[in-house]
Image (cartoon, rainbow, N blue to C red; front, side, top):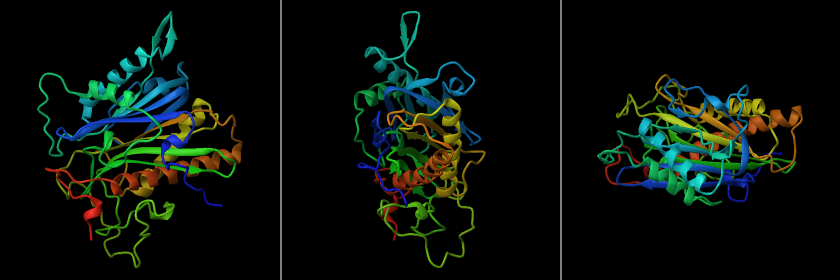
Length: 335
């Protein structure tokens, strides 16, 4: 049987996760925090050629720290890595973190996307605003949050369109859940040729991004490579996301889940994983279901990680809203 979306169709359908957004619309940028109510097993995989990250080495299976307290996705290119410091400060104030010699150190890996050339006012003075945005995102965290032009998706773009923050979830037959959250800022295109139809259409559930399906017949330019190099501004790319489950997973299994979720990028974006993208996926396993997957269940979980991630990418672009100075139109304006 095909999966059904969770109650919210958000990553927060995975028990144990909250999400908070903070943004500055004058800046056309922001950040998103995925907060773990209890420490969660985590891993990551980067396949783009231009990633920007913090605290990702510790996520490798052979390294000591097994769990994280939060993940931060931020705009701002390398300046946006400051958002993790703000999130870390908010968590430390709550007494949350990895205990080391009587001290609590919140474990907050982060990834950034490049949104400096999107028409926003980046004249922020001596220090960029991302530390405060990260702190505010933690304070705003909860089970419900906005998609589209919010959080890390505020100033995101894809080839020819405004990008955005997207999320989706799927309930599996045994009652476990897989969820994804993605800030779509790709070099490539999320729609087929010049049409309104999303590449992710085969995985759509309940008309969650328009219900258009794939175009029929496929347009003649279906194999044409459409990128920001043909739709300036260029060099402003990265798709960063989180895939999460309530299964109990090892760190190595979480890494395999992150690798599998990259198939969702390839299903939803053409081309993806280019030398000018920073494509990255974090994986979280909260263990809240109390279940450990067997071999068949793990294969199914990884497959749905890809399809749910593809859906989240399309939902982010589908939900984007226009603002003054945008370099690209929003999907809803297409005819």
